[in-house]
Length: 493
Image (tube, rainbow, N blue to C red):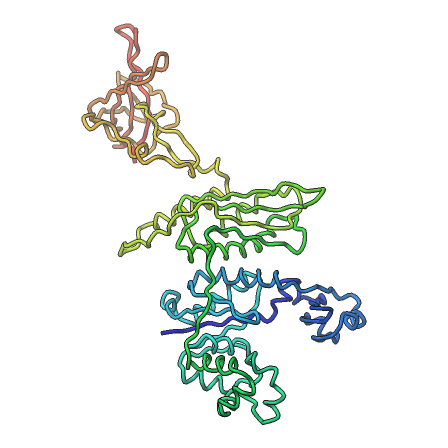
């Protein structure tokens, strides 16, 4: 089923040039010295679209005036389109600050049209924009419904009924002839469709008939789809100097949403990203502050990246105010297919565990979250070292085992940081109670020169039936009548 979502951003000029337009401040966007868009406070003071700059300053001398820049609006609309690529690769830009999305093939994936619209609205709020959403079986029909306030319809008969009630001046080719349509009593698209087509074409031109036929599903529609670039780099100019790192999370989230759309469109997962905090330029220029995040498991979702950035920004101390952000994806790889496991893994999947470790690293620092790395040494206390959890350990080293012809005792789950010397009573080691050897000895002899050690390890059992890992140290050159020294090195669960 072909289904389209139309998004019309009516406040795009205000949201691009004055993000706080909805507050009490009076903001006005001008185009060629005439008012293009006004905030509610300025509108309440009498400022209207089309008014000249002088009239605005006469009514509100304290009003903040902004000159429209079409390039910045196009960049903002492209940023929204990039974020929407996470839902479908078929996103097209239409006229008058409108985006069209072919979403028919993605409805089941996102739980239906209502759930999908809720997610899109949440993304738009996170990006700092407001939009009128519509849904229709044709792209031009979705465009018209979005431009008229937004509505949802899935069936073609319902779309025809809704379109017939829209005003006749809504299609752009019909606006120059609005007075003529009003003069002949043609007030809606339904009235326009009942007019003779040859006469309507001679009077208003072929584009008007083409847009009507496309909206009513009578002709096919062709679009230039927005393509994701081969590499990702997104920038955001802040509207004020930010001196608190935590306040940068909102802007960073906007960039992460664009990254999510780019990853989904390119079928990639990111392993390493950098967020550059740009400072003042010019004579007082300062090098940008870099925040790098390295992921143990590649991801293409923004929720986990937002949590990691929140932890890192919470610990970041700014050396200077920040005026801009730049996000780059430095290391990516093809997106891995979902797990084919029928039942959920106990304790969560491996990806969930890796995300938890990454969150701990961001909160506690890499020097406080460690993992054991095996070492080529038979001595238990030197058999591994602790390294940061983000450090990659080669599979051959991690899975290394003793030679198959070497018989060894089971290893305890708790190895003491330092062996404890045991008392001797009646020629037997004592730890709470006399210990009885419950296994044959295992000799471990390793080390070089003065570091060489020779030990005979046993599994010992106490009177409470607890099991211990003990060893008897061989003393080179000791007298014949000297007693051996015993040490406790580990505890069994």
